[in-house]
Image 1: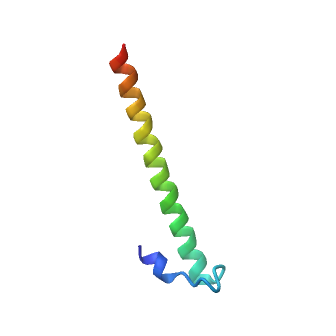
Image 2: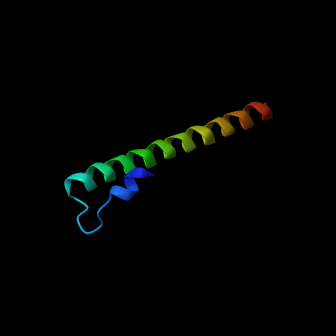
Length: 51
């Protein structure tokens, strides 16, 4: 959450803003991967229950 406060919306490609933007994107990617893993585990459990 700290990286959002560092963003300078008038200069997103500036030194501090680019590091913050990369960190935010990496965090979003990690959350997305965890959601995909969670969904795949739920699907796997449902398949095992139906057998």
